[in-house]
Length: 283
Image (cartoon, rainbow, N blue to C red):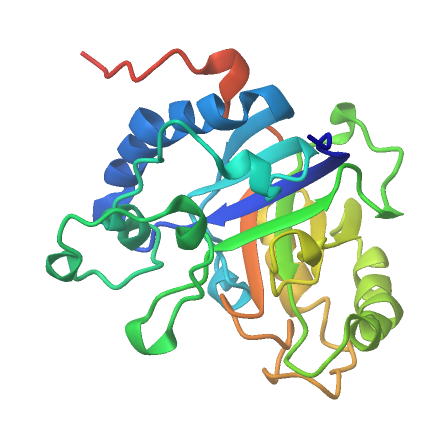
């Protein structure tokens, strides 16, 4: 049998919980079922599996596709979509409710009966504006950031880091090359020159690994949410609008469809390999 190719990549999943009544339900499913099942499946070829808990979506964050639950991060040593990794002794416990709680299916549980999702099918959910549902955003990128645009010498001693992590795709019909001309010639110089920003990194999304429609991922740091709000309102007033814009104001992209964001601190909520010890409820 041919050996599986060594292909180190990093992945992000942008997780939302649109209805507050479901937050504890989603947490239960993730920790009681999803985390141990995931480690059982990919432990031999994933070196890091971490949740970063989202900070509250800031004022005006909804128009940037702000999500409010967590970022899931993996560091893979092989292509996780290699067909040989799909043969598992046990299937994931992936009830439809888990997708409802994340906003990927309408909140109509009576229509789903007790059927189970295939986990990979669930992760391909595209969302539907008519049902007020959102796409499952699962992107791959290189192990290391490709472009270091500002703040390379920054250390933890330089201050607090409010991290705006976002991924986006240019509107249909706009190639990565066309869109990136505006991104690097207009958007990035604007943010690099802002006093509010302290660190800027970006990479292309490796869309070929899972057919993700998203094309680029960016992380921009600020001292706090107020500095972020200043930057994305006052700081962008002179930014040239791209001819392909689908929204009149910055970021010129449709929230949750063309741009999705999380707001994070430096610290992960849980590094599962070192911190997960089973589902131990509070007494």
